[in-house]
Length: 328
Image 1 (cartoon, rainbow, N blue to C red):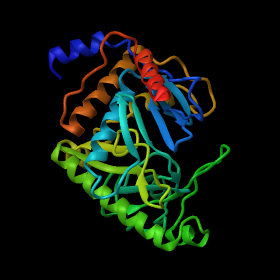
Image 2 (cartoon, rainbow, N blue to C red):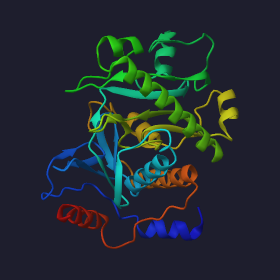
Image 3 (cartoon, rainbow, N blue to C red):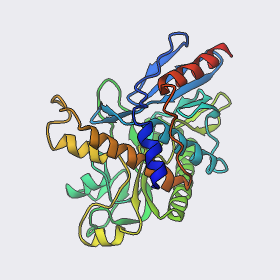
């Protein structure tokens, strides 16, 4: 980034959106990263905060993160609207999207183009454990960590509730359990693969690899399939640098990525991240993560990032936008 960009970012380093709670708005639901409101007229307001979540908990707040995610999702929604309509109605603030309230599908849809991942449901974790059949797919022997698959695959999971863990599913199980009808699952599958192909093509134009991603899909009041929440962001996707990928793959090293792994790895190296108290994360590590998110925004979209002004406080700006929505 240029010197003037660094200077502007430093000037707004204190601008952090921890939460956006407006007691005048109904239907509040707080996620790990987003604060959401369901309005009586069928609209849903989603505010993307700067909270960083990993290991089923919020670890810290990262300046600009919410604005970056909202901005990338907006760009990606606009570049995929011809494939699948989305929930977006308006963007009244850099951290806010107003959308249609959808009946979210009970299946988590993840598309993977590479043998990667760190969670228990990732294909790399299963492959390392010796499994070759997973999610109704069969992978060949001899693959190495982070290698490209012959063709992208969908690895659906159930959506766990009450502290349970997501459960891997096959297409047959989705239909047999009546989670989705055969016709709807076919539509979801074809849509997800088409979205992923578009995302990979757009990433390649920017010198990036879109390795895998998650899609949140739902049905609107008319029964139309729509995208919700976010799409092709660093939090919902795994991005790698294309120029260094071959060398790092050959050396057995982890690809250069744009995600929150720098914080996640720091925490995991110092405690049991699922059970123990998390030590205070150094401010410089948080700032490094903020710059990584800004870099991801500019690389993915090809646009310059506009940080929030030093004043007014970003929370005050967001709450003002929410009050206007309430008044309207």
